[in-house]
Image: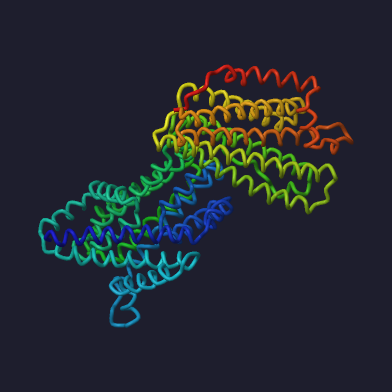
Length: 597
């Protein structure tokens, strides 16, 4: 095998891997999030979970994509750890679909239709159809379909080219001796795991092994341990995705690894013990694409059937391997049966809105931390929690809309309205936390650093916003009128701080003490921080209205209330305003003109 063949082989491998990536991303995009929704809803039963995992993975042609979704769902609280066991088992079955498709290369070419189904002709045909769709449609589903066909064409074309490039290896004795060494199960498992970890796809590495069957040196005892190793190596992707995530997310990745390791150990013990006792006639028989695909399928199906009854033990083992309490991320349950009792349904919805507020505040804290010490893992957690906030919002909106179909009292109807408004405010607070994180990312990417003076101003502002967030969530959680009354004085102090800091910002720009690029980020931070306080003010007014004395709930008009307290003359309000002004505004009032450079 000369240098030209080596170059052709790696070029074909690149085409094959790119085809796999293009196919997977196209199918994921085509699903438009529907697969994730199915995974969330149909995992209350272990058998359903296995089926869902197999179907989803078969559709996207990637067990790694499915397990990464599981890690993300567990990390964001959408799923419990126990729900992922069946999905992971099913994902291992679904990932064998691609190998079964690639076995088309073994079809007889006597029939024209069958000939067109072989990789030599099927790949170019799919690529032609794909490029036509991809090039002549500007966007939408048809362009995505073209991407899927194009990925499939590249997959088959790359495989056929790999086969042709590797064909000369069959004549090299050293190559035959090399694969003879892989009959050692531990060496074969290691090679399979390393290759799969390198290409980040067991589907791709199995395809490479199928292509190697054209050399005539791949026998059963050689292929078997390599396939076992490929299933272990694919766990690397989910392990990498769990880094920096919650403990339960890490346990999800550990479940994936344990399942494949235990399955491999069982097969190794049974097969090698059987070989010693019975001398299997197929032990050294040559493998084809089809037999490789069948072996891959049998291994994953049998492993699932054996380990399925022990799914709870796998969860306990994962908890032992990664000990400690995990941060509570499970969603408040909004059971449809509560809808029959509106008062109870409203309480559960209130709990879910509180959870949204907790998540939003956690994200605010992460965003503020990113401004002082940037951490990519913390940013990933922030985005996952933001996804959880959005999912709770969707869930609550649907739940409350269905609740309005029931016979509600006027008080209950008002509570539904307040819940809808409040969940919107908490969702917006979460969005502004994301905006703050984007400012932190921009500062890091552009190597921009605020001066100590400017950092002090931002610290005062972020501390004030932190307190109003805590006060707001506390008043909402406990329906505390006293705490709700304390929100507006804090909001007015934050408004004053923003106004002063904006003025200073303009002066810095005029005198050239601040660059436009850095000043833009400073101003963006102030705007987002002030808007967070505005939404806290909204929630505080909702609680004041809800906790008004009987018969006076509708008497509080938000505009009139704000106008009256801001006008002065309310002793309690003025006292609180003076307290928060001294606590936060005084930290910036006496400072010299800052140098935000």
